[in-house]
Image 1 (cartoon, helix red, strand yellow):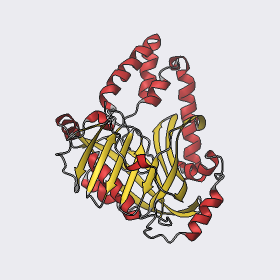
Image 2: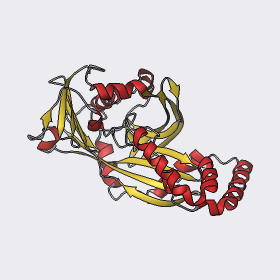
Image 3: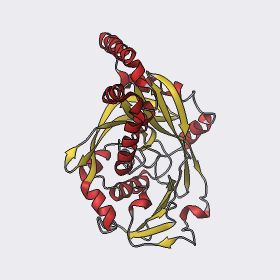
Image 4: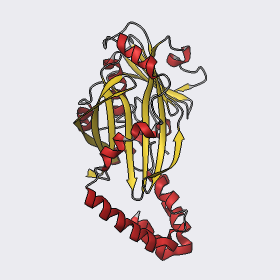
Amino acid sequence: MCCDLTVATILREKTLEYRQTLLNTARGLLTEKVEPGLGLLGVAEEPFRLISRLKWLEKETYNSRTLYTAASIGAFVIIASLLLPMESVGISQFSELMGGQPENSQTLAADHAKSTGSSSAGCYFIKELAWTEEYEWWSKANSTFQEPSRFYLCQDKASLTQDNLTCILDQSANSFTLISHRTESYVVMDLPLDIPGIWSDELRWIFKQRTTSGDVKKTRQRKEINGRKSQLYKVTYWPLVDGKKNRKSETQVWASTEVPFDIGLHEQVLFNLRRIYNRDADLQQELLKIKGAQTRVTMYNKRFPLETRYCSEIMDISEQAPPAEAFTIPADYRQKEQIEPRDLGIQ
């Protein structure tokens, strides 16, 4: 952001042309959504989004350079003198940012009380809320809510729908089906997945250029989220482009084993999604350190003085029969042999 401010000071009225250059470059780099929605932990954490920079460059920042510089120095002095742990503050204030406990927190607590934590013969529906928070100078500037995901876990099947994708795991058929609502197509794959055989030539070339790695650290922090005791993990991701680490991003994950559904089935869905999205073996192994289902996920994208938080949280877990469309491929969709970039939202 400081580099952008320097450029804006030099270009002044031509700053919008620089913004357009970034936008054109972004089209070639941006390949995936960044929100860490339910079930997509370890799948959608690429820090390539340039929205914060593009919004910043819409303003006439070159007229306020002295003010921004002075404010930055003042903020640094204050933070350094107080040794303020910024990430800890973010977690402690998270419930306030959410506006308190949801209305159905008592229902969740009752569900927790009768939960055995083991596999159930019934089907469970996981209701999740996902949203984006934008901050400028530590003040919330905007909040945007996304369409909730739909996750059904049954005895030997699981179905996850989110961001124009539906994934169906069928243990009895030993198959994993990826349905793209963007392209109105689907691919049925045998397990274990044939990587890279399931990728088209174009997708294989993209993933050859880069993959994603990272590590997981278990903390000592624990808290109750919507009636479920949860453990905090800190996940750090870095894209590997031509074998070199790029800018890291951090995600905070609260996970709980106090859930009524089969966590093993839940993990199989995530594991196969991560393979499809070319997450490397080291990251896959690290993510196994997270025990339980993620009750809350917060990803931080920081470009001082702007910060964007991508959040998701389990709001309800209920035992109910899934609708027919959860495990059904639309009749007018075409079947393909391989996954193409557009199927995954890669432009």
